[in-house]
Amino acid sequence: MMVRVILYQKQLGIAINHSDADEMRRFRPHFVCFPEYFFVNPNLANQFQTPQNQARQLQRIAVLSRELSAVIIGGTMPELAEGKLYNTSFVFQDGKLLGRYRKKRLFFAEEGKITPGTSYRIFSAYGFSFGVLICADVFDDGGFHFMREHGARIIFAPTFSPKKVETVEEKFKRDNDIYVRGAAISNAVIVKVCGVRSELRNYLQARSLIAGKQGIIFRVMPEEEDSAMIIKKEIEV
Image 1 (tube, rainbow, N blue to C red):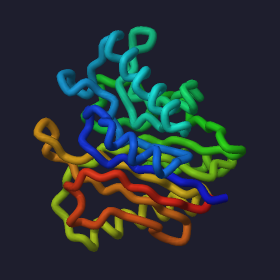
Image 2: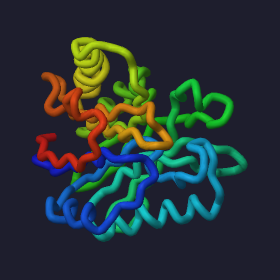
Image 3: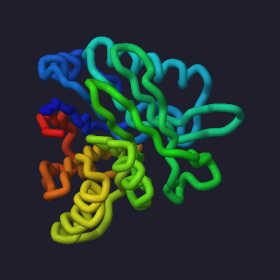
Image 4: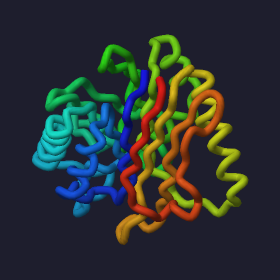
């Protein structure tokens, strides 16, 4: 089956303007994925949330999914629940919540602030299953094995990617070691979406990619790692 996916590689926390919404609508996507910590208030720290802001961000995702008539993987946002804070990806389709996935494997900067999730999740749309793994989750093969066992055909990976001092060869090797390998273990296509650096987060690199078990299907080139873009691709799953 061929599906149309959009990777929204832009600055974290920005408003989605009419021009971007129109461009996405014209592509008629099945799925739109945002980066980790995209649905945040720029005036708040990443690992902070208020009930009012949480409700507002969820409404933004719901409205966009309805306007695009698509599945929206809402990057992630801090989620307040039962007195705890999670790093959560909310998934909506046509204005309705399909479910949420709470990041299991935390980045060191999240430890002590974010509560890890306890289980992986599978979602269904268009007659097949898909999953979400958030950033450092990809370092646990258990997530890939779970996706294979539950028949996921696409894995969306919202990611927060700090810059590293490394060569292009090292970057591409890491893509293969993590994402191509993960695609082979899971027997699924992996769609990784990163945020672009901004004035508030000038240490990010946007290394979005799509990987299959045979190799990299698409990747942002090193010279484009600071470029805000809407990446539109049709892939077979």
